[in-house]
Length: 308
Image 1 (spheres, rainbow, N blue to C red):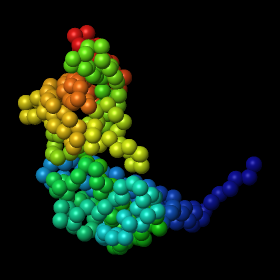
Image 2: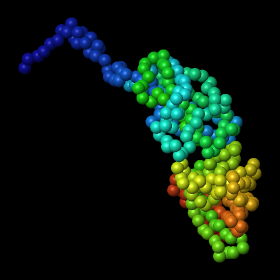
Image 3: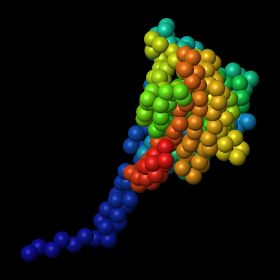
Image 4: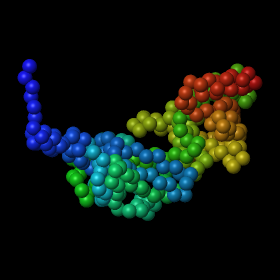
């Protein structure tokens, strides 16, 4: 068998050559690009808590690449005044409510740029909003775009974001109705019903709008039940409930209690149904995230139904 003996000089040359070979982790596998996170079809949805005098929402700006940043990257953000009109024209028909830009007087930016720091992937660009004047049935957007960067290039896509505002408070959201409607003078005229209800935040941090029985309004619906079949529920400081009409719904009285530990309304209200006085009694409970949470509320409701 022949033995191959490498001289010290050859070994040194091989060692140096091996050190010159870069690891894939030390190279950019693809060029870093700057973009807005989650700007799918330019829409970014954000919840605005109208219970706060000033609430903060934000967009996230990121640098995509195969390695962590070795330097800070400053990204300039500005408004795109034409973007909302283009979206309304391309995506919405003339029969539905169009989006409008949030009034400039009620929001501001702490800065006109966002800095993504070395070693980080992204940072947030905050927007401060005073929501007191916003209306539940109006559709609002803030049109933003990335206009420049101190390093790397802007991505060809995902650099424009129409920030769509969804008004919320701690009582709003998807609920399930479990209730009975009774004619106060004719016990045979009784309706038991269960229905999904979307309680919409309005006015302040503790008031929601709800629809009485009829279908809720959606953009493009032929019939709009908002004026004639909607009312407001306010959870007071002591968790008691107050009821008032939204527009034309003839609510007479109402009451009950909000149970924060269950996220549940135990309520009643009377109303005038074309000259017939009726009373609705029941429960509204917020959508549950797990089967165990649903089991707990189902057991609670079962006990309460026995005394109904």
